[in-house]
Image 1 (cartoon, rainbow, N blue to C red):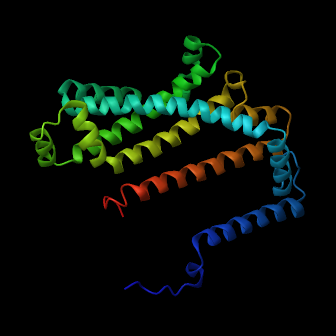
Image 2 (cartoon, helix red, strand yellow):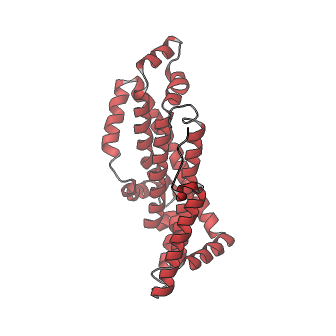
Length: 265
């Protein structure tokens, strides 16, 4: 029997509660700007930010910047995830692969990916390939580490039964290991997305010329040059909204896979 909720706040639907919190925070922000007489160069009001968002969505600046950043990020994330899965799979079947993953993780995982961007620019030039390269580096290790951990939590009995049924190599990975390790894999992909998202925006901010095609980092950096504070806030809002949408996407995938399969509450 479901316990009765006595807190009136918790009786409200979750989306409504979140909406109320957001409205209250925006109201406090607007009141602060209106009554403190803070310079518009320091803090833009929610109304100014909303107006800037509307303008730059209408003229295509924000959609183009968002599309460019997402294309760069997803390309690097896809490459990084494939390499991470490959390393974790190799570590399952080979002691050499296990040592290779351990060494590469110990050496490369602690390195901030953004610190490698100057070297990537020397190698690949002032192009999107430089940013894709460092996003790939940022996303390999969360996927590899979590996938490897997931593989190692699978019972030896399950693996033995699968091998007795004739499953070997790639088939064993695809048919047994990947589904059984799905909670860890999703965690790795979520972490990789977060690392990659921060990396791509930071790269476009710090090395704007490399993101001159028009990514979100470039959009924010250009606004800084022209002291357009509402535009900076508009870019930050877009980044936050995209983060919320992706989190919702991962939650939907989890509810339709590992939660439905009884692997996670």
